[in-house]
Amino acid sequence: SHFAEGTRRLEDTLASNVEDGPLKARALTYLGTIDAARGRSAAALSRLEQAITLWGTVGDEAELAAARDELGWAVYEGGEEEAQTLELFEQNLEHARRFGHHALASRSLAGVCQMLVVTGQFERAEPLALELHASMRDSEDVVNMCAADHYLADCAMHRRDYTLAEQHRLSALETALTSENVMQQAVEIHGLALTAAGLGRDKEALRLEGTVDAKYEELGAALALLPFYATWRERDLGAARARLGEARANAAFDEGRAMTWDQAIELALGRRSAVRV
Image 1 (spheres, rainbow, N blue to C red):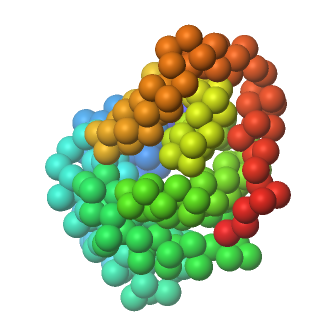
Image 2: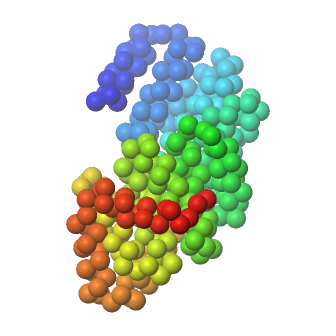
Image 3: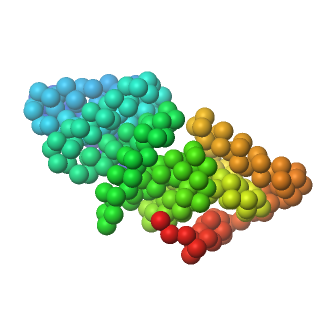
């Protein structure tokens, strides 16, 4: 795989007794990032912390901030202390803004939003998500474009503004489609199942949930829900199931499972002409 090949080359660089400096720091940063992506949390944290120490010695503030940002995401993915992760992202955001590094500022801002949403601090998250959303206009950064709409949808869902949540979720899905990130598409379609349920479109909601269930099964993945999201699922999709009754709800869910992914996307985007963010 690309990860395995990249890891081998970078580890060869470190094994060559390269002196402490930019080359070694960069190799450690890249290796830590790869380790985090592969779920090797302990190795990622160790390498990124070494890289941060080296970048500090080298005195390259931009690279230091980038490595600290990678550390923040590695800590988050490793399920470590949420407060520590939020503090890292907030510090990274401050550094990126100080050095006028727009791309890093956007990524760090997304990290702050992520941690505020994860910890249920929606009121704090929303103005920052709006800032991220505004900064993404006319941008080609599809990851953070999607993230901005995703967080704004979450904030709207928290206060049960299903109409606004649907608008942002649709935008997030459209952006995810341009990046061909199927997992992110599934996340946004599941969010649209919740908003459909909240707006009383119960059969559509259960069909959308069924499409996502089938896609995750196909990918060999599990739909891991954060606690607040699991609460929304029970609140909204649970209510939709109750209104439909068990037989009709199960039939709609099974209809969704039988759809192709293209049909699922068409269903999810079916209301796009009626709403615009």
